Length: 188
Length: 188
Image (tube, rainbow over all chains, first blue to last red; front, side, top):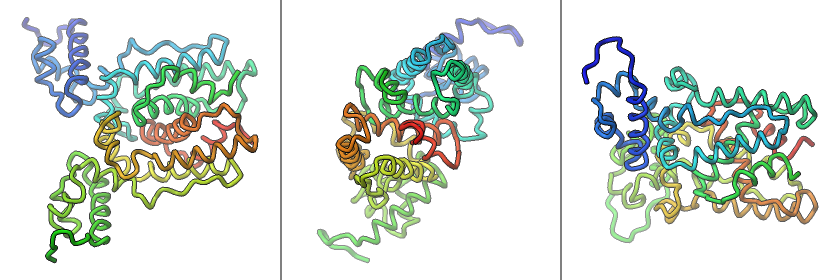
């Protein structure tokens, strides 16, 4: 299919490329992933992939952390429930083989000032963190959380526990989200 | 210096190799690190390095997580102090450039059943976790921690927070250890 300059990309092309990237991440890992392999699997040309994702890290990031995957975390009025939803979303995300395969390639890019931080669609959970700050504000207002609560540090503790247990420890306990929330917030 | 079979390695050779590995990790990162570069920097031959560390991952693991670095965490009778010591040790470790450079290469090997788990000197914090279990047992006995406390999950939460804040968020708050302990254990 020929494409003239400036013609809008078909949404399904991007979806096919991201799906292909996810499959290949799980199959061959980050290092062996290439634009060639992705293009072949998605049934498009290499330039088609490169035009939209000029760096492998950005392609892998969008594939492993898709925009439509971010469970909207809003202030429901029940702090523990909202915290549990965040942790459950993190467990789902980091349980996926493509996410774990992506991490080694993305880690060096999480440093300050890196291109990923500059150009990622959702620079490393900025949207999720923004939502979580609103959750904590509501909880503090209702007295469900102390006024001194630092939402970003709480986010680090909750999501860090998920990543460390699943990826660093290679753990697989089935009640991970609930156990983390009870440990961090205290048993009800 | 010629070396006959079975002659014990000189301790300083291993130390030189590990020091060279740490420098090179910080300079060129995991992927570009090679036995050749390490041997050159350490002033030894490539076979000398390979005999002791038959895989790059094991060499990098020993360099980034040296045995003499594990601050002995014991039950001092003050649970919060022991927890703070663990978290401070994690902050020191994961603040080092060579540790962060090593992570992308080591992550895939933290999976269950990997060679790293089988052969690492201290398979992924087994010693530290054992010490921490003793700390928690003592704390439970004294009523400083609830009997339901899961020491391994608490370890994941505490160290996970450090890794996530430093490596994933690229954060650098100076009071990180204290802030994590107060959040997880509650302010005193």
